[in-house]
Image 1 (tube, rainbow, N blue to C red):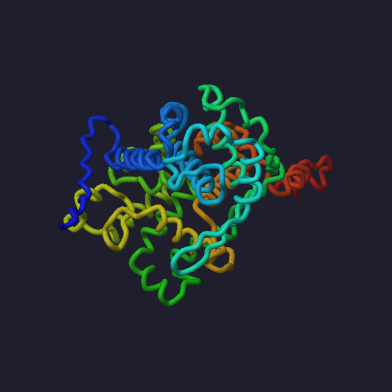
Image 2 (image 1 turned 60 degrees about the horizontal axis):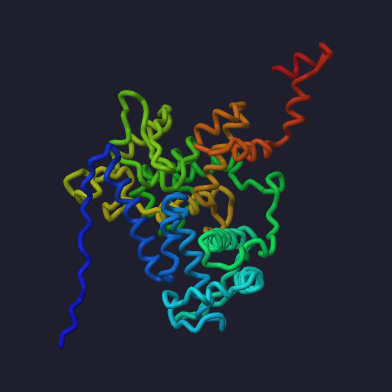
Length: 384
């Protein structure tokens, strides 16, 4: 008897909102991934799944579900706390019997460093305190919910060991210095520092890559905000463009001359003509050489490549797009712009996040005092 293969159905967007199809599609894909994760988890968690839908953003919901699935896999594969052979088969009574010490051992011992055997290699994964704190937070939310709903006899989350995270002032803000930004721009303009193989690709994508980097360091965009940009996002007659942020917020950003120039050059010189682009990707601003919307991974790789050149490091030592967001924030603050204006531009929920970048201004005291002379003989020099 032949086994019938299930064909994956094409997803079509029937969009009656004023948001672009690609934004709606992206959210739909996240929701679908969440539903797939929920199928792998025990059915008694259904109430918790509903709670997450209303309580957190889709990306956060997906992160919680990944963490909880990982914990359930640990219970099945590494402990005798359950007799289940699959994560979805874990019983409610088994979960209710979990103690704070079981979770503390999982976080502090197992998660710090664990092995995953695959066909070709054994991978060693190591987590720092920030990653461990996120895993602990996901389980805390789950167990608190289950206690509140009567599934757990006690709130075991109160017994979870604390994980020390650096205070805001202790955190090092990784970003490019101004001279490194200039080196990076020279690299993407001229191809400096690229290998022979990289130069072959660069000759076909230099206008695109220039526009991407300039958007990051000018506006401090998040990776997904830039990746989802469309041709229709830009209104050159008004000198502005739209981005879609967290919680579905639409934000209009002003175009400056530099950014407008590089985007126009990319569209006019390098971007493929519409007749060779698929219907789904016709409106996408940044395209791959395969004429598809550029993926987040591809954008991350090109940012790592050019930042590594700027810092004179190996490709693995390059920065992520989020470090260019930090570069934009610190540069704006060092130019004397208001923290509250920078907060609005970067879409920080809380101004204390923006203040982290302000705390890393270099030589602030020296700059203030050098420009505040009382004696006439020094005053003129200091303000030249």
